[in-house]
Image (cartoon, rainbow over all chains, first blue to last red; front, top):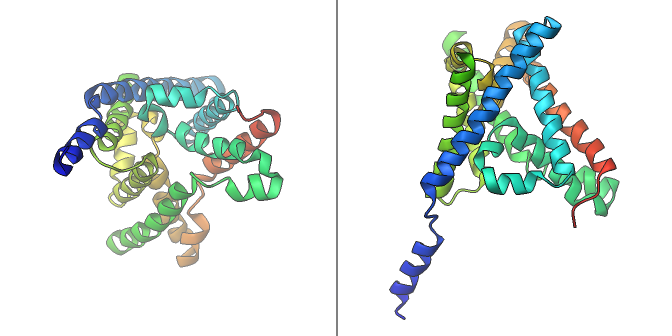
Length: 145
Length: 116
């Protein structure tokens, strides 16, 4: 086989042929999570008479707890392979990245395992969030004072 | 009605992530980082807060709202305590999410065994 043919073959095989299907699954999963988040927030506001901000915070904590528990039971990884980005982009993905890193390195001990590897995956979110927030806040201050 | 809007909005954000993943060579780590930066950028013109107001609390769920909250909290901190407040206030709203994820993850790890 010629080299170019080979490269073409690899490219055609490695490109995901299910782009639209994946996108649709992510859309549905993300949508269901978003809608249930909205319902949960409204329930918190009605039930405990909370302000919208605090109710949102509680709802986020509930989702984080659920994601951590599902990761502990070993269910979350198979859910992610099925539902893809519908679970990664919401805050559940952030919680999952921390708890799965903790579980993966449990056998290396409390300090060298858990302590030093906890932010292996979530670190990029915190680092680039903080760095970009610093720059953009200065921009915002320069625009609006 | 807010429930339907939240469904559409969060769904579309996740769909965009999926499309980026399938059409480029970026990893999920790249995409979540990118989304946080986009959320922080949208906070400059209060665009993300307008989305939350009009669509509903559902918009606080995607990771983009993490960047938005960082910028808004830092901006509020700047107005309360000057330049020092920018550092002091940056995590004001997101700290619940970060500490919640750490605490839940830690106790789950103590009580559960890794799968293999």
